[in-house]
Image (tube, rainbow over all chains, first blue to last red):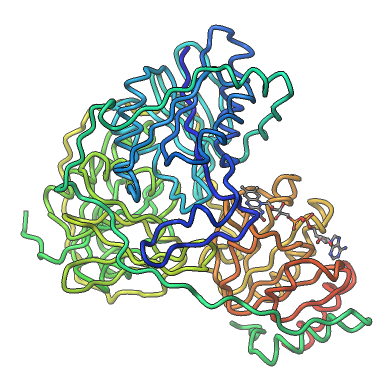
Length: 263
Length: 328
Ligand SMILES: Cc1cc2nc3c(=O)[nH]c(=O)nc-3n(C[C@H](O)[C@H](O)[C@H](O)COP(=O)(O)OP(=O)(O)OC[C@H]3O[C@@H](n4cnc5c(N)ncnc54)[C@H](O)[C@@H]3O)c2cc1C
């Protein structure tokens, strides 16, 4: 089985993330780039499937600028993926979701796949829509936001807990799934993996190689303004000397935050 | 079919498999009606059209379209995407609005991909200027406010649940069946189903005025009753940190933060939560923040209006008693 895992490089969420107010784009240099944790969990799903079915090839696919991305992606190879494909093109700077999904769809067709696994939502401005868009563009079946996954030869099934309901569902392959952080943490790369990663195939593609011609007329989502909110400051802080509960209640009452019994 | 005004906003509302309107419809219709004429689309089992039509009109929908697909119970999303496509073709809306719920987002994303429309995700409000509809976003934990629009054609927008307080005036009921040609595109098949929107006496986390959240400091699922007790004394909703969710104290749907729910209530109380940056991303635009933590260096204190360095197991019971006393 050929499994593509969508990987994304994001600024480390433990750092402060900033937005370029001129372009409305993420400031990529502001914080250390890492593999998005949720895409590592997606990779873990693929790798644990390969442990059961040795006939599985795990391919990392990412779209993004040159620079740190190839090195970041190596971590996924060190974890155990077989090879990586990086789509990179200066024309993709500021690409919206629609364009990104088109590019990933073209790359996935180029690579060939039985199953594509993605994280449900990325941590940088992640809307959680890309896997669904990709599914639609590829014309295959999909399951979004799975908190459990079972993969076999011809089908994938899993469970999803939404705001209102919870269901089990299955798709016939080929297909696309996205997984939530309810799935297990990813494994750490070991020394052997890190050494092996250096020799694994790493392919870089541009839009021309994928046969994508950008069309000025296409509908795009554009940022028309961006502004920073003032940061929040710390207020009062007390040590509990036995009456902190009463003091909070007093604070709540002063701020009209205690409702009457009938309300 | 009657004509649709040029300023129509197509709104996908969520209906349960038993034909009940789910929460969120009032918010979506309210936001849509503030910029145009709200045309509501609902997928429902046969026999609910008239009632849903008048319920949605009461919430401010000037027209209501009902689709009754056969595969409603067995298919995950394709009937919804097909209905959106059919409705958009009939209405030619200026924008399409869905909830930024798991299912709403799935349907909106697929519809945008199918129709080649621009997609604006997780908006906290919409407005219009001379060129059309604008989506407002609050990003990176609310540190930035960003406006987006479509370069051309209708913008597909998912609205963050509980983010908009606009409500529309009731309209006369005007309901029609929407004929939908099934695309036959592959879809997932549902094999087991359970409605989980429990009838709770507590407010929903999204959109609640008051949220009380518990973290790893609670120590166990049983101890979460401490959080519940305070939430109930204040009439608030319950939230949690990811560590509390990972430890199995509460379900994931309660997680506040970057990869959970984003809330912006009048009052947010953090109990036994350290205030990791990913947690703050989901609550730091709350109007008033109170934190109780025994570690004086916990980062949650950097954003708390009122911080108490203390043990939640002694402070919270006293606080609950004091609230009860003040309420009389
Ligand atoms: C990609 C990514 C996404 C993430 N998304 C989220 C998210 O959406 N939401 C989220 O919450 N986290 C998220 N996290 C995790 C986050 O980094 C923290 O690990 C998590 O928020 C910690 O939860 P906590 O504060 O409950 O636990 P801890 O950090 O362990 O803090 C527990 C606190 O309880 C205090 N405490 C213990 N006992 C008591 C007591 N008796 N009385 C008073 N205080 C007490 C301790 O002093 C401590 O400060 C994410 C992390 C990553 C990498």
